[in-house]
Each structure stands twice: as C-alpha cells, then as structure tokens.
Image (cartoon, rainbow, N blue to C red):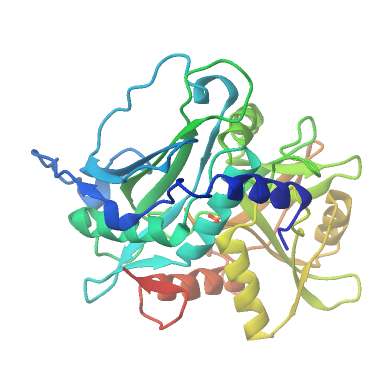
Length: 389
Ligand SMILES: *Cc1c(COP(=O)(O)O)cnc(C)c1O
C-alpha cells in the first residue's frame, strides 16, 4: 500500500548504509543513567496535554560512517545543538505520537506500536534521515516506560503520551542528506481529551490554503507539514471554530481535520448506510486510529465501509437532505472527536449528534468506536493490538 516510488528508492539508498561496519540500532547496548532528582508528579486533574515530562528520555545518535551508536536512557534534559544544525534550517525532523497505558493489573501496554515504528521509518526515508530497527526502538521504549512507570496514570482515559522524534544534526548549511542524526523519545502524562465527556467541535473548511497534495509529503509525519497549518488554524479559531477542515483541489475534496483523519457516516447516494474516509492517496496521513476504526467497522459488518474521495459540495447536499448521520475526526490524542458544525463558504452546516439523546455530544457509532478502542488500549478486552511491554 505504501510502496510508492520514493520509498523504494529511499530504502535502497539506506540499505547501502547498513553494509559491513555500519551498525543498526541495538537495544542490548543501552547505557542507562538514572536521574539523581526525581520530579514531583502532577495530579491527574492538573495535567495539560504536552506540558509535563517524565524524569528520563531515550537518545541514540547516528552517523554515516558508523551507523547507530549505543542508545541511552538518561535524565530528561535540554539538547545542546550548534546554531548551524540542519534541523533548524531545513526542518530535517519527523516524529510519532503513541501512548503507553496502565491496565488494571498494573501492566504497561502499547497500542499497535509496530505501526508507529513502520510509519516513522517511512517518514525518515522521505526526508533522507536514516532507517532504524523498529523492534529495537520498541525494546528501548519498553525499558523506558518501566523506568518512568510512576508517570503513567492508572486511571482510564489517562496515559503516557510518547513522542519518538528524529532530527538531522549535521552542522552544515548545505542542502544535503544529513550525515548525522539523533533519535530521541520523550514522554508526558496526559488526561482524556474531553475531561467532561465528549465535546463536539465546530470546523471551518479552509478554502484558501491546502495541507498536502498528491506526490507531496502529507502522508509523512514530518515537522515541516505542521507549522504551515497554524495560520489556517488561527483563522478558523478567530471565527469560533476549534479546528479547520482541510480541503484539496478546485472541487474541494475533503481530506483531514486539523491533525486528525476524517470519517463520515451517512446514507449514500444509493441510500445505503456507509462509513467513508478519504483514501491513502499520498496526501492523507495513514493514522493508526484510522486503520483501527476501518478494521473494527469491517468486523462489525453493520454498514458499508469505503475509502473514497468525497467533495464538500457532495457533503453539503447530503447534510441538507438529512442523509448525514455522524462526522468525526480520529487520532491518537482523542481517539474520536465528534463534529457538530462545518462552516463552508460562509454557511454553517449543522451535523446531527445523537438522534436518541439531544444532550449527547457524540453519535452512537462515534461513541462505540471510542469505547471499543479504549477497552483494547486498557487491556479490558483481549486483542493482539494491545502489547504488554
Ligand atoms: C498523527 C496524525 C493523524 C492521526 O494519526 P494516529 O496514528 O491515528 O494518531 C492524522 N492526521 C495527521 C495530519 C496527523 O499528523
């Protein structure tokens, strides 16, 4: 599915780097340095997403001659980088977003972490950063989450958000594939996205800017994709929307919601109940949550499940005809984010939430996806998707 031309090329180029004396990332070589002073924990109720970090971090350096050097788990601290470091100039940076959960027995669990490792290697390939062995990084993440386990809240809805990151660290202004790179992982305890249950959001459809385009980088989780989204987000916020809805093309194809994948449950043109999400055409980020929702929906087999293009005029017509049942965004941070209004070309289009409960902030299937995924993440329901570290 992802074997696009650039990836094949990048993998071939990278595999040359794995020859003879070049070492791969090796978790068994890890050097562990414990922090002398442990930070005070923050009460669950006071957690703000992405503001509190644990006591330690994982780091590993890479260079073209030697490959991956011994990784480290060490105290969380500032990085020291020369102003000429390539990441500051050409955005040689990619990242992942995943979570560690504590189950009722106190085990630490990850949710489909192999997908994050594979996606990160596709991101690094796209920006000419090195490949790494995802299983080795997962071993390091396992050790790190155990070491900082006191930071993983043991309450449903809470977790430790993990941010694996890779940056180009060569000190040079030439526009070349970096000869040096650093991989690091930091973690922050986070609470439920919606503290008081779901809160349906308003979107503004962005017609002036696009997030991604075919044969661009929209399918890679690289830092360079996100800063340009902040202005449209600010414009949407100024008009009372929580997120912007990214469109593409003159026909205003629906793509993503802020940094989430988009789902629509509707009665389609043939009056069939259908769950639709835009296809992975290179401009859509292949979300782990997106894939999980598609798999669950196909397993339930209660409605048609389709990955296809859909335009804003088609959605507008369906909303006006009362054919739209539920619209939601999907991503690791919130699992699902119900949508109640879309502002499109100056018009507010209202989307129903729950037909059976006027006080509800999410449709029945939106809720069911969220509950089912959480049951798996917290080990309340057995599934190969949940991996005990
Ligand atoms: C990370 C991200 C998503 C969601 O991916 P998950 O793996 O489900 O967290 C969706 N869209 C964009 C643009 C993203 O960066």
